[in-house]
Length: 371
Ligand SMILES: Cc1ncc(COP(=O)(O)O)c(C=O)c1O
Image 1: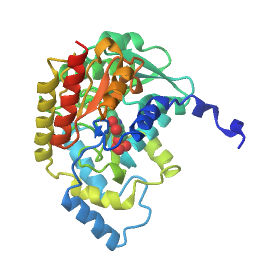
Image 2: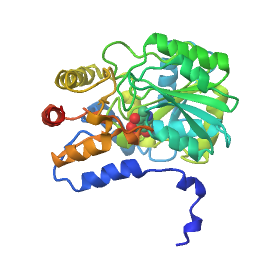
Image 3: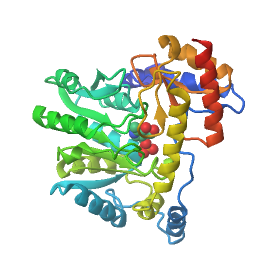
């Protein structure tokens, strides 16, 4: 095939970091896998039953682009009671990734800048590239907190939006209400759009996570069922934001994804309001296990939410450290996958307790060997 057929934009999307991690994983037999960003629990039974009933009732066709009214109205009611914004509208999307793509492509023109925090979920920077934009990073090491002065300094004439993610992937850090409020107010004052990725919202252990939409009604919120209900393969998410922006995102969805998967949307109706408190308590216990095992041996910003921790690697060298972990059959991800730096590594604790315990034992041995 002619290499020139490949668009230049694809050359600007560098997937080598994560590919290297997966290539290394392929050589391992039955690894202790603390690398995966998906929950270890199954979809709740009522959600499965609703999806099966939908298939049997023949709901197997396209739906309206905005999403089936049953689901949209439930979510709209939740959003209205949380924020009371006149203008806030819900759009059902193909996963929260779908919502992010529609949002970023509806906002960025070529050359426009999008501010992201470093480290962050790698997709953000790739989406900016895809839209022809440029991602500008605001460093958050070593505590992974929002420094409002740094964000203010990063906003320039080309800045269109800021993306915030709390609880965060890969750090597990949850922004405090004060941090969120300052960011929301700064974006309002500087006239840039704030995108808030809240997919880990239900996993906040020390205090409830707050949406910046509380203080800034123009915020575009990205949410979904993948993490909260163990539905990663169902590709079901939703966005809510100013009606004018949601209208543009729906237009793009019409000509790209068409709609979120129909059957997943019917399952989603049963997922809204389903109490996941038991799962949250289990994940909080896993977080506690991890902090108890590692806090004294690693430089670790307290993970308060999601199901990740992001300790500093001994010697500030994450890739060699993850290679040593692999020699012990443990898989964790080097920070360079999420960051300009390669000093930290990501642990996902969304695994069975015995797997987590084995992984933590290896991490304790590795830390002791290097001190
Ligand atoms: C921060 C963050 N946002 C969005 C997503 C995408 O989730 P989904 O598209 O499955 O809803 C992920 C998945 O890992 C994530 O970590």
